[in-house]
Image (cartoon, rainbow, N blue to C red; front, top):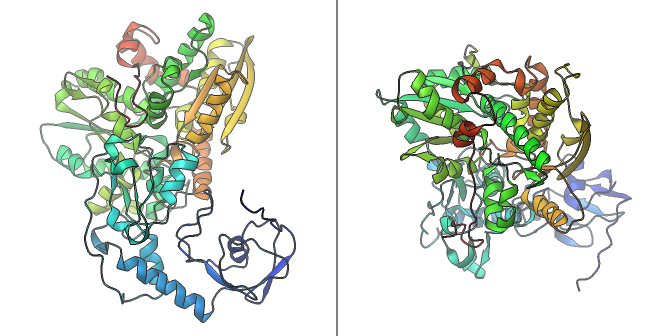
Length: 587
């Protein structure tokens, strides 16, 4: 048993001569930051456990000497010094040692300009490294459809290890070996494609350098755009529009939809569509599927299937629950099916002449687009997936001045979505969209058109709600983060709780916190993005999926209505068990 530590939560300390209240602070780092001093850190992350390995946040405490502020609890009367000759010398030394063991090809690094190591080296005035370079380079792992691991850029901060274990509950990363041979790797050094990675990209979101990066498809998209024999259409997910502006000087959550559309058209896409159109179709199909299951009282609870990282997690670790997953394709894949099988025909093209590109906040969507279930006669429904950051790269590469663009709107017929489709980007958004649909579908007396289901909103890991619609009582749950999902599944399996429907999103806060979003991708930023989505929802004239006339027409024209054999053929799917160690489909 470890020694019990009593943390003092009241009292005062002195930081560089300024008196600061402890006021519940868990460590000296929090107290110091309250005093207006931003201590540098690598291994400290407010959403993860304390690791205390990088020693960048060292301070001097009177009577104790040098201590790591992230792992040292405050005590009443402490005198803390943050900017002494010893602390400055130590921080520069740490940076130099990290740089000596680091691939310093910064100009070609994915994180150049947003790299924490680069930033701190400049901040601390490190202009030369007195130590030799690493002896040899290790090969990068490019086997994953979504991620790239470059061990030459790893600084052993452990953020990816703790994120994957603590927040996502998968644990594909860990430390191996000792001393100078220590590195972060998978079990038995297996390639990423051969482990149980769910491709969520949250390890990329917390990696301070370019050791983990998103696998880019930018070049393939450029080739498609410049091919005169291809008609290239693009769909944009709702969470992208409240994050892309961050790369062009806007605040997180600030609306940049019309400038983004203008940029996409200027890049050369033939049609620019909105994934919220397909989200409205998904809501309709999923809500009607839920009603069917409630009528039959089977395969409950219904789990959402919009998140490909969650779907792969379920396939690997909960094959017994696969029948409980909604058979609806995600909005991305519904959209791809519509484009290749129906829209192409309407404009006189065949599926092979069309290229469908998605812009998503999510790295797991790259994996999802390659699933064999979503390929017809050798043609993918979605050909390429760009993250928000990859789209930014294309805009900058083309020399487009984003902030000077004249606003433009999405093209129709696949460019119109409701507010219910917009909030898909936030945790709880899918559930709220379904509730909006059901209120209009089941309760003819309620024709107000405005339904805001507040209990499912917010950043809590697990949210529960209960409501009655037209005599039908529904118990609902919303969860984000796969560790939280696992905890909820265990309670459901043991019979401790029962729900009729459960929404699961792998990323903290939902899609707006996806691994393909700009950095910083922390809680503060995600909260602002979430606020931005709900502001967009309030401004939409169309509030419920069934009020979207373009979706209604598409259902009638292409499928003879919703929830029938034709929609189940082209808008639904099924999932299969995978090995829990390799992530490979079970033969």
